[in-house]
Length: 241
Length: 241
Image (tube, rainbow over all chains, first blue to last red; front, side, top):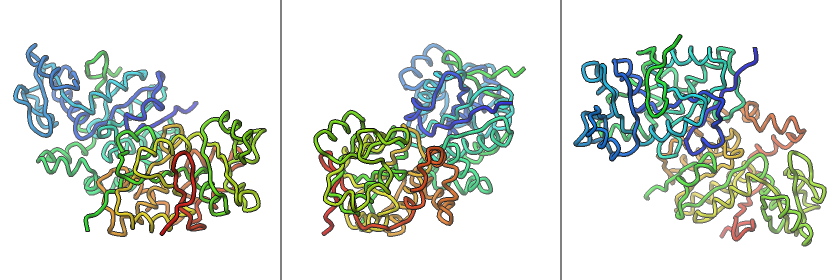
């Protein structure tokens, strides 16, 4: 079998040279957007609509959506709750369509839609996602949301963890230096992921705001088999046949 | 003493969010432009003018400049020699002003000129450069040329080697995730740099074209104390006081 190509783009600023319309794009924003999205769908949410601006979140709140929105760590006054994965409890989200306000995440998802198909990745669904990607017979691009167009450690690390699984399967091959850099990160981190993450700038930012309680949860693999898929502005669960 | 900030930008595509007018920018394109520039000045060249297009190189050749230019590994018919550091021998370059045609390198140097000052780094001058940077009392940005706006392993690795020296000095500190990623690369590679580079895409490209003979030379530290500095379109040796 001809192997499929695996590439990684470590910041949306480089998406112009990595994206192509034939690749499945995996969007990665592990702290916290893509972890929260996986958890929301696992807990019974029908859909999530990622929005980039506070204004749009507010407008949709007025239309009756449940809204998760915060800025700089504070829940916005009109929102129902904040952006932590822990907020998406079954009691709150089951059967609901949710608006999720995230700056980096929303932008990255929109950029990703130039690809063949957009799915959402995090440690929460890493095995389900890897298994599914191996069956698609498609090239794959791992697209990290990063932090305001800079590279971040946490998304790069997850890209390395997922790349390791895909390349170990013999379905994929890579000539992409960014993939290889993240494989090295994963090899250094896998024995103590939380220890490795101590040096991440986002680790410090979340700690300073008291928002770091979700970090162990966001790095615990396989709490769900859900694969979130983005289409026409909405994220729903992929129907795996 | 207040520590100075160290950042690394792994591709020119992210320079918009990393560059600022207060930082000294170190341009890195180790295979082969910045290694060749260091070697040319060490061997007595008076100056180098980096140019991005074949047309400009040709125009300057007609004006009497010595021209180093190749595309896809072939020396251009009007050029005096190709882009390998080995071509810049004392016999050829002493006392000369040289036009050096390089696509990624030229573009990166031009982007870098938005910074406070632009200097050129490679393993050839790593100690001289690190020593000088520690004395400037300025923030520093390491700017990797990469490969067509993608990240490459060889420039990232050199950024890690230089960052290690700067941070070990206690003059610099960093909150930049990209710096930390390259420090990990350097920690994995430093015992066997050439072995580590085997996985770099540029390693394969140069091998396929028979242009890889310079790789050990480009990764041998401290063959020169020259610090190339870019100003108004021209690279000359920094007068260190």
